[in-house]
Length: 505
Image (cartoon, rainbow, N blue to C red; front, side):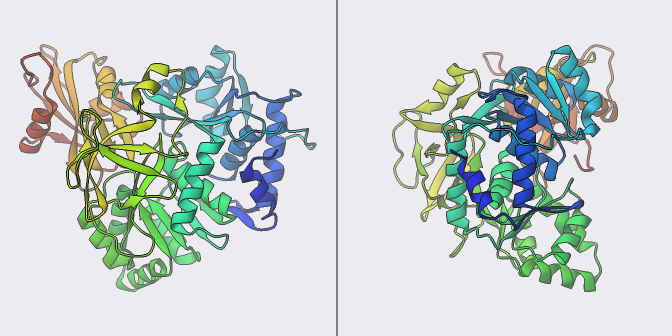
């Protein structure tokens, strides 16, 4: 049995699937070349049998072909982040137990030595694919399909495992709610190691038989040019991207601004997610584009759960109501459902909810209560719409659409020779949602500049995890139990003049 995603692609053979700077690729191209990739991966075996295949490829046709090739060979796709330094890539490859690494030539220098050290099979996307296509295995939709790494309160990122069935449920829910059709054209500007870019944009587009226009990296001027030049119908981004697009619009000439605004107005839907959308950004974007951005709420573990309506009233600061096939409830600390108008933890039940944390049965068991996934996010329902109040854990920071663990960053910062102790917090910021900030206690006689600190940290951490503000303090505020009081640290940042890194992260 073919995967439904593949069967649907076969019905759209001649239509354009992926559009990149290299040209347009049809669904037939995608099917043919992904089957060649699957044949190479199988390497004369019948089925990868859920072997993990890690891959590091910039957004584009090769990324999609590789992802589909892994699935069609019976493997589990483990996408890596193109901006991650070696320690983070190594962690994901090792933790997932990947047996094969696929890399774009740009990343050969960083990944080939890793593959050699760990005795893993290494494939470059530039290698010529076999002309023939071998027999591909039948893939049951209950099989594991994808592992995405997401930060948790325990520090190191956990591997979130979704099956083909989970992905299908996540996609069909959004296609129903947002009325995707094969005549849609979407511009893809999001990272492809993250659920927002993989599911909400890429897989929804390909399930619907639509066109996905992919940029190799985000550039505000290039995005505006594409919006003006292409007949796009959909656009999805994180608040940080909308902030950058607003800045580019404001720097344009009056004549150019008119063209940019008119091009936005032609689209049928613009969506914002992965972080809270500041009201001022929503209002500015509405003035520029004519679109009241549709906000929604989701997580790597559940796909999307809540959404403002496609048709009908949307409210700023709210994430709407449960999506099709999704049940949502709010509960108190004892697990009791809260009365109307009272805040509670969001719990979710749906066929889109993930299968497990990879090889972490303890964390998986802890994440569920009576079959409901416990999100760790607080919300309240007002006038039938959900409003997110924040996270139950102060140790998860949402910055620029990424969810990062303060505990993980602290562990890394403590390895710096000049840092004795540290506390990492998220401080509210209109552009990034939250900025990653670090209060540092230095060792005796040591000094540290923000520039040298960030240079060091970038060699250890993904750039969006590197603090953009630091404060040198004599000691960290602690409670009677000796635990650092994070809310006090946040307050210190709000009232002190910290060293700031104000350029793009």
